[in-house]
Length: 395
Ligand code: BDR
Ligand code: CA
Image 1 (cartoon, rainbow, N blue to C red):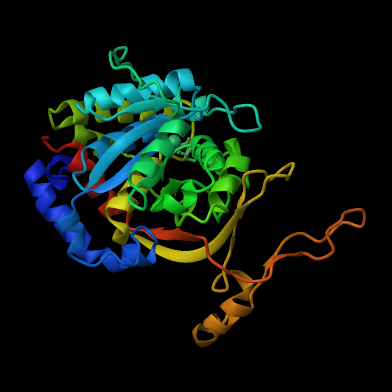
Image 2: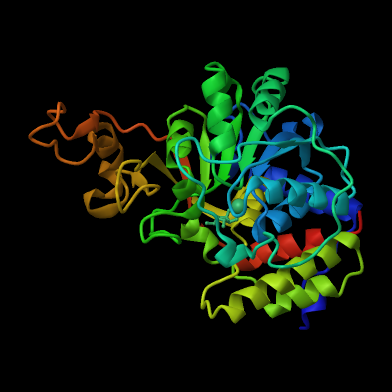
């Protein structure tokens, strides 16, 4: 089968019918378990209620750019706003890159706000080694004509969440600086957020250091605020996103369709592959951020496990590491019939107290209460079918 046949572009009408309804029913149980939907959401209610309200926070970024195009081509989503943050490249590039994607998708109706130009406490470390100097792998697009809204990202996040309490899900594709700033400015906000789906973290080693995934590494203090906020978190980390490597076949499939979105996506993807190869990387480019958006659209693409996740902020070598506690993982796991009992007994243990310190016990929390559903496996082929067909869809 040639790549063009494999990823048949859907019309808007077809993907509303096949994906929105199908995904809503087939993966709803999953979505509830994954914390993506609140437990009171019943099958069928989703379609009557219409699309889900989301805000997307992003640092384009090659994979952010494709993730934004995917989101804007997904009728299940009512995108209330998109906010930009410094990350892969500085804010003075991520913000115009975000505006470029909104223009390419013909969605200038979506408000775009600029956010933090550096992490809460640290200097910005960017990822031009992976995304090129312009953040889009060197793919060039005209200067955007669209302007951002005047509100800073953290303010806009607060306004939108307060306008629709309990309804707005946050989809985060970059460092969590804007989200942490919004939560810190308004202590009631976390309780009004429906859920947060992040590309970030890893329970199986990092990509910028052996310990840390890039988004968490850049602003670990912000990530810690988010993980401890009480917002139901869905973590789509490197454990699954490193299995989403873009290939020449994928790019050819995009190139075969003549729409502004598929052509732009193909151009970015082609540049990203060239950029990666020229630098001799054996891994990538991976579609990390698109997988997070896809996880929101169809959680059944992935398998999930509940963890209590916290973030290392003080390690000289390990800052930004996400540490996941679960009675069902690692050497402390038990036979299935004993897992529940073990879950009640497990404590959250940190490092041993120092002789000079004030802490007397390694126990940080005496009870295991999960704060995140973590993606532990992915059907990468199904994910790429969703990604390519939506990017190729005629709007
Ligand atoms: C994450 O870091 C960025 O480089 C990507 O855009 C993605 O959000 C992957 O670690
Ligand atoms: Ca990103």
